[in-house]
Image (cartoon, rainbow, N blue to C red):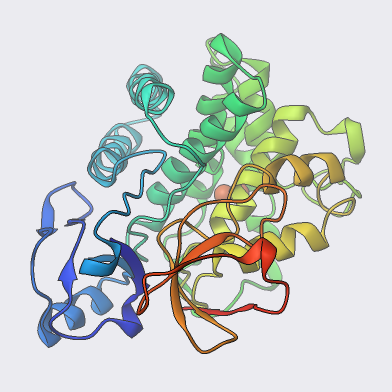
Length: 340
Ligand SMILES: [Fe+2]
Ligand SMILES: [Fe+2]
């Protein structure tokens, strides 16, 4: 299988992975031959990328941090407990426990979560995806046991303060400004205020919720904390949620591709995020998702086969037409021109 932007999918291509709706039900099943009207339907629900099956990439198995079905189910489960009166902490803890056991038992080589990202249900999806990525990344950074669970709780709840914004605030077709922006910038604090009377919430969880928009150089909000004033979990939460937000579609912009988001993070190393944290991140999260279809500077179409942590922008690829393998780390003159 390989992944392709929906805009580059043509009728007759076959889905390699099912697509789920916001409730976790199959919308279009794997093996289905796509028609113009199916492609149209996916465009309408805001799907940007799908996995398709073809002979050339039959052997390529793309394993992600969380299988799409589990992920869709988790998003639906989180939506349910989140929507209940008040914050159903035991329910949220159940979602976290399930996620932790799925992710810690999963067999994935690199941290990747390229499955369906639709524009609808974005808030719950962003929370669940941020939690998945953060748990996978945190575990590889040596965070374990109860600390990992507290990190996970914080990541799942990090944007809980957004629930107090007037309805529709986040559905605007342009970036927020003025009073609305001011109110938005308070959401880490508002979020913490919603939970602070609960004695069953850890200070580590709090750090993620209240500090995920603070930035290393002090340019963040709401308190303008700087460097080590920001708790390790606030720093990790900030970087992971920024990466997920950049790579997710928003009403006013399409998603950044993984390598573009990595470039933004690298450009902000030592500014928005500690240089060490960014270094750790780019050695663990691939700049080009495995299975992504790309166009090389030679004009060839190829598929990303694996991740090269030493040279993240030069992964091994397979040429689609000739089937030949190419290690871009050994081909300095060949560039990846576009992710298709
Ligand atoms: Fe946030
Ligand atoms: Fe967020």
